[in-house]
Length: 409
Ligand SMILES: CC(=O)SCCNC(=O)CCNC(=O)[C@H](O)C(C)(C)COP(=O)(O)OP(=O)(O)OC[C@H]1O[C@@H](n2cnc3c(N)ncnc32)[C@H](O)[C@@H]1OP(=O)(O)O
Image (tube, rainbow, N blue to C red; front, side):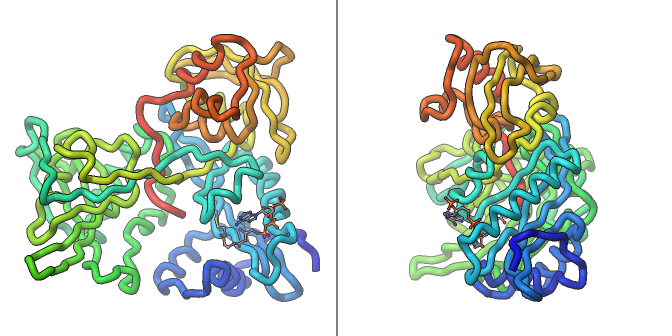
C-alpha cells in the first residue's frame, strides 16, 4: 500500500466516515449527526489514505473564518475528522496526512490552521500550540447567590422553541464574534451545529430548551440548555446543563445566569465549555462552590507566520525581531520583524538580530492572546535574546478578552 493521501470523492464518504467512527470506538453516531457532518463536509478539502479499496486514514479541513485580537476575521483551516485504522497505526499515516494538509492549507492561502484534539499529545509535533482554554464548572445553586447589576429586571425572558428561535440566536452570536478572539464566524449551514441534540445522547436530560432575553422588544441574549430532573429521598435534585449562551450586554448576561440558576426543582448548573474569563464568575457569591476547571480547547498553527502575525492587533506598541523555528513547515523558519499596536501590524522577513527565539508552536499558543509569552518562557519554551524584549512582547501579544472556541467541529 501507499501512504500517499488523496482527495476524497463524495461516493467514498460512507466508507471513509466508517473508518473514522471505528477509530473512535465503533459506536455509530446518531443519524442526524452523521447527516449533518456529511452536509457540511467540503469534499475537495477532505483527504484519506487507502489500503487497496479500504480507507485506513482520514482528515478534513473546513474553511472557517476565525476572529483574532482586534476583531479581524481570518480565513482558517478547521482541521477535523482525523483518524487512522487501528490495524495501520504508528506507521506514519497521520504524518503523511498532516504533511499533505498543511501544504494544501498554504496553497489555499489560509494563514492559520486550528483543531480540537482527541488527545493533546498528538499535534505539537506538527506545530500546533494550545491557544484557547474552556472553563467547566458546577454551580451549587443551593449555596451560591448571584449579585446582578442595576437594570437586570428590565430584561424580559421568553421561552422559545430552539429551532424557531435560531435566527434570533444567530443574530446575537454574529455580533459577539468580533468581540472575542477564537470565535468562528458562522458559515451557511453551521447554525445547525449548536442545535444538534440526539435523543440517545441526552443521558436522561430533557430535549434542548431555549430562552431569549429581550429589552425594548429586541433580542439581546439567549441561552440553550437542558434540564436533568433527579429526585433524592430529601427532595428535588435536578441539574441545568448549559449548552450555549450569548448576551450583548451585562444586564442581559446577568438576567440569563440568574434565570439558569433559579429554575425550580434544580440544585446545580453545569457549565461545560465557557470562556476562561466568563462573567458568571463575578456574579456568584462563592466561586469555590462552583469548582471551576480549565481544559485545552483550540490548538492553533500559524501556517504563514508573516501573514498571520500581521492580521491581528496588539494590545500595546511592539517592535520585535522573532527567530522562529518550524521544522515541519520550513518556509516559516528564520527571523521576522513584527511592528504593530492596537490599530494593526506588519510582519516581514529581516536580517536584523533577533530579540526572542521560539518555535511556531509557541506562536500558535500566544496568537489569540490567551497564553502569555512570559509563561511559555518560564517553561523554557521562549528564549529572550535582548533584555526587556520578553516582557514588552508578552504585554503586546496579550488581549483583554480571553479567546474561546464556542463549539467543537
Ligand atoms: C482534529 C482531530 O480530528 S483529533 C482526532 C484524532 N484521532 C483519534 O484520536 C482517533 C484514534 N487515534 C488514531 O486514529 C491514530 O492513533 C492517530 C490519528 C491519533 C495517530 O495516527 P498514526 O498514523 O498512528 O500516527 P503516526 O504513525 O503518523 O505518528 C506520528 C508520531 O506521533 C505519535 N503519536 C501519534 N498518535 C499518538 C497518540 N495518540 N499518543 C501519543 N503519540 C502519538 C507517534 O508515536 C509518532 O511519533 P514518532 O514520530 O516519535 O514515532
